Amino acid sequence: MIRRVPHAKMGAMVAWSDGVDQILHGDLTTAIAYLTPAGGAVATAVAPVGLRDRNAGVVSFTTSLGFGKKIDRIRRDPKVALAYHAREHGFAGGNNRYVLVQGDAEIVEAPDREYLETVVGPAAERFMGKPKRGPFWDRWLAAYYADRVPVNVTGRRILVWDGLDCAGDPQVLGEPLPAEPPAPQNEPGKGAGPRIECDRALRSLEGLSHRLLTYKDADGYPMVLPVEIRGAGSEGLRLRAARTLPPGGRRAGLLAHRYNAQLVGLASRLHTGWMTVGEDRTAALYAPHTEAGFKAPANKTLLLLGNGFLARRGLKKAEKERAAATA
View (cartoon, one colour):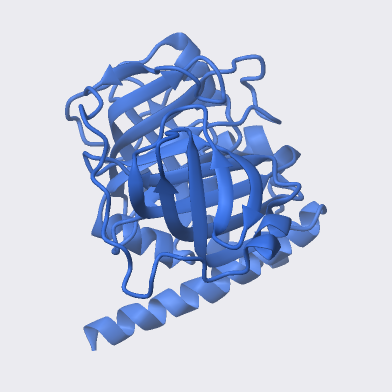
């Protein structure tokens, strides 16, 4: 049974097929892409645990208030994209479609506790196993579990490729794609070249099986595409995509990650930077400007201890920032 997400906006609905619904219901991880104030886009991996409302054309995920930067960016500009790009360890194995949902996000600032306990909890248990319980774990994970908020994305468009490499033209559900690619952007004031040593950046991406490039498309929604990393030089990382990329230069994000069953032992690497595309529209030179990442231990107990620590620290920071803003 598909449970209705709380406060989902009932606007123009995008309908999807049973094959697409299998992916939305079955993928363990997806990439949420959102826009940056400078006009770029970044993506990070989240676990949607099958949350969606097919009748309303809404897909959802939850996030902790302790991870406030992502929430603040989505509040500032709700145009987001969710890329269902990986089939390991979920329930949609054998279905090799790549599904990209572009739409408008709504953060449920005061979620219904019953929804979190009766819908999100069982959905997460289906993917992650039974949660840790007891006086210590209930207290330690309060910021991670109890302070989670749903984010509902009302789909404006769903792009469906037959293969996970996104070769060829996608099936378009909902609004048509923009007729023209996005215009090139002005170079940053500090310059477009690499600000991070590219050979070192390449080494940090090795072993991370999923690599996704994201940028702001012509209609303002993030585009998220899988890419191969073909090497590095002094001018940047050499990327190759199966789908054509917009010509010229622009801000772009690069996410690389891997994950195991129940998200134990996952690793992620995120760059923001500058992408340049020339005559070969499937090749790009990517100059990394910033970097971030983490590796989670391949032990569920250690993973939960780390999640609790990061969420508690982030929540305290968010509370201080809110207090300062209202002082």
